[in-house]
Amino acid sequence: MPATSTTAPVALTAKALLLDMDGTIVNSDAVVERCWRDWAQRHGLDPHEAMKVVHGRQGYATMAILLPDRPMELNHAENAEMLARETADTDGVVPVPGAPAFMASLGGLPHALVTSADAALATTRMTAAGLPMPEVRVTAESVGSSKPHPEGFLKGAAALGVDPADCIVFEDSAAGIAAGHAAGMRVIGVGPRAAAHAPTHHVPDLTSVHAAGDPTHTIRLTLHPATAQ
Image 1 (cartoon, rainbow, N blue to C red):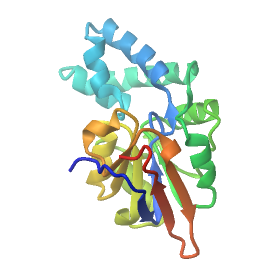
Image 2: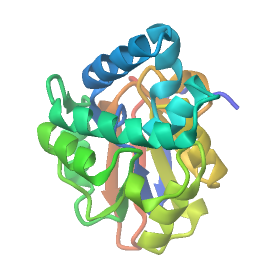
Image 3: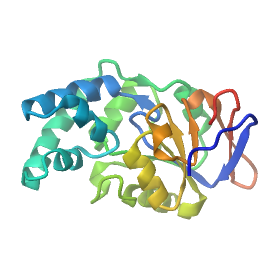
Image 4: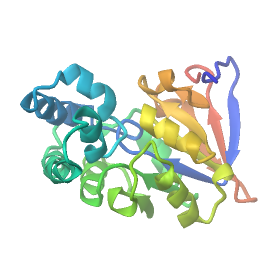
């Protein structure tokens, strides 16, 4: 189903929120573009075509798609090099509009970071963007399968002690949105990439999202009509 379009506020409830990082709360596109375009060119690939599959996946999974005949051990080795390069490059890493206020509103509410970055890269980018790191986080080291596999989101829900159906995912990429749906969760797509990949709802950024808790330990989300779709 396409994301809903509305002229009135959209009210949603959940027991927990699961947040992707890159493209969802942190804008790291400048770094990702630099590193992956260079990688694609070194391997004789079209950088524009490569960027279509980079977002949302762990690096080794992206490499496996782009170089399907290459041994997986080489993908894992180059992924380690790519993670180190991305961790060292924070030029242009900024919060997605609305992310600082949104993350501040989640203090005390059940939420987790579920990212394809490893722990070092996640820490570096969250720090560079000036965002608080959630206490519960599922990083690349925590899973055996990359998005679009639902493992990361299911582990996030389990760590929070919440049924998957009671979670809402925030994602920006095709792989991440597919992973959220596969986990049996509703998905709010954030940003321009998300709109084409059938999230449950879509917002252009986090300025149009308001989160608050209530005495029943329910998270109440409002997607505001000026921008929510």
